[in-house]
Image (cartoon, rainbow, N blue to C red; front, side, top):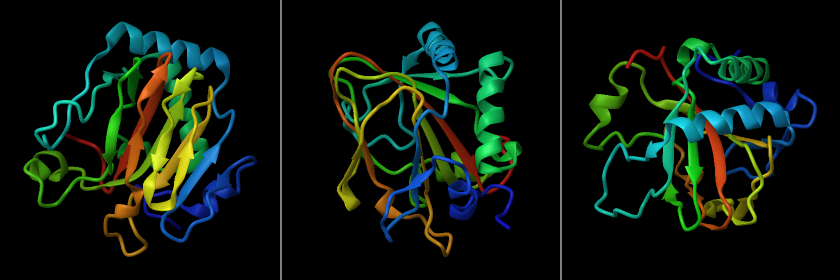
Length: 211
């Protein structure tokens, strides 16, 4: 059985509709229609009401590296509780290991350049972000709407681009089988060419969240 902060390929593909991207380089999955339209709409409304400029854990001097807006979603909101229950039923990860749900909004021209979700052990903020809950294990990302042009998520190492669809879930293991960070999870939130993109992201940690 996986540890409390982990899911597994076996657990995920046991659910109807879950598709694994065929690559030995990383564990990457998608599930169309994970969220219904009304839940997507409710989450979009929360993001619009509370969004702020996105930031980076380790600033790299590029002011245009991440140009989206971000929103931390309250666990007391009914739509957030619904989302969390659906994620637990899918991934079986102990909710105590989850970071708060985050929403992102990308307007035309905005993007998140190629990056990995795990924290760099040599990074300046490693101690700040990982001393309590440890490294990130899994990423679960959900597109909330269709985008007129652009806005795909590209995994360069496997030459795979996933396009936004309302309610589609994309998830991956940020680590290799030996527990070390997997650089093949490098991904690019590609520039929105036309329209607006809304995304939900849920990250999980090695130890219970308490930061």
